[in-house]
Each structure stands twice: as structure tokens, then as C-alpha cells.
Image (cartoon, one colour):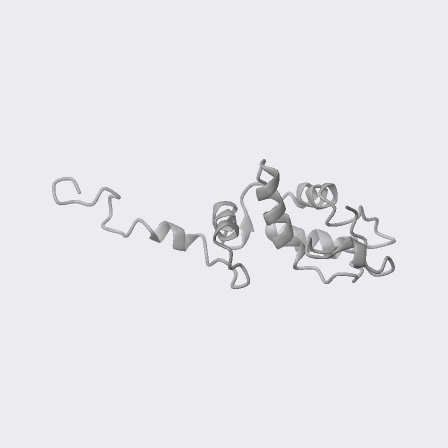
Length: 132
């Protein structure tokens, strides 16, 4: 407080800026995972792709969970889903492919996406395209 006024300027609770970011999804229980989510997502939208690989994997795993493993998605649907997370859906797609979450897609074959929780050693190759 300076002269009876709070330092944040408006008498507002400083933690309210965290509320503007939106809630952390209920399936995220690990505090460090929740911290990464809060740092890179605002109201469910990815603000930037983390440079640090461990954080990038947390972000990509969250995005990949939107897709049902083994289900083929037309390229247009994949683009629309990824665009809901970030306007540069091609960047997000490349990151998913680079980290083994998704194969490259073509309009004729569609895409299959599996979250990192999929164990490649026990996956059925006809339903899972995880490359690790």
C-alpha cells in the first residue's frame, strides 16, 4: 500500500488476473502441470508454444487429448480443432507431429492422434500411429 492505496492500482485483488486466464481443466491435478497450463493458456487458448521441451510436451498432451485415439479425422476437422487452441494451427500441428503425437496428414487419409499416455509397445498398429 502506498498512501492507503493498494499497489495494484484499482483496489482489485492481484490474483484476479489469474482468474482471467480461466480455470485449469479438472483432469489436471499435478501442481507443476497446472502451472504450465496457467502460464501458456488463457481461457483455453494457447498463447505461445513453450520453448522448453518438458513444458511443450505438457501443452501438446493437453491438445492431443481432444482427439479420440485411433479415430481418423479429415484434415479440415483437425485444422478447425487446432485453430480453436491457436490461430497458427499449422505450427501446432507441426509441434504435434515433431513430438510424436500425430502423423502428418493429407486430405485423403485423415489424421490419427494419440495422447502421450498411449504406450507404443502395447498399441495396435491398426488403431494407433504413435511414433516414439
